[in-house]
Image (cartoon, rainbow, N blue to C red):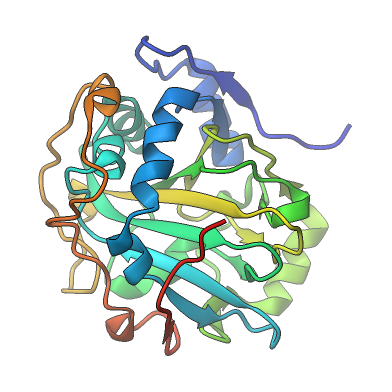
Length: 295
């Protein structure tokens, strides 16, 4: 039987409880999926929010190492008070993350990965901690909440992971184009021991994964866009030992899940602290773009 990630179903209006089964999946695989963690009515608000001018203006491209496509990013350090910020501060994400990581967490950064049809580029095999280690985070006590804004599947370049690879420790990373890629020889060894799983999700489905899990995504060669919102958290106890381009500890103003549907701020990005990618020491020189194309 092919390996799969454990899936859990969210019921809107109820708290997201971290069950023993979730903790078992977290320990064993380093990731699990919560189906419809963000139901259609919440996703409608998020999509409207992500289409705002400020987010489009902050987009930039990085060389993905293939010579044919580029990867596009929008990154911000503070959650803010728009819909995406309310989601990042919602109890169903923050409280779950704190239970998984074992302590108080803060918003490390959020990134939108807007893979456009026929053009969205590759993200090479890597661990997030392969980047974040260089920011002075001494332990891999971080995770990412990956929200499928659109359906993500093998046709439009969904994320692929190696369940269990988070137990292998931090891999050496080096530059591949404008990205940091895991050591190629080590990756060949991992491929002999760990299955690669394409993570297929519908809009609103969410994967929570450990900072040391090995993952990648392919180019979007389809005629469908594939957008994903990735919210990353660090523990208070693991605050970076050096000043870097992502957020330092700041106590999160956690809000009830009901605040998502109550939020009407789609365009005011005050306080989000969008990344000036030219100052990001963990990637190659970016190419700024005028707009994130609408599809």
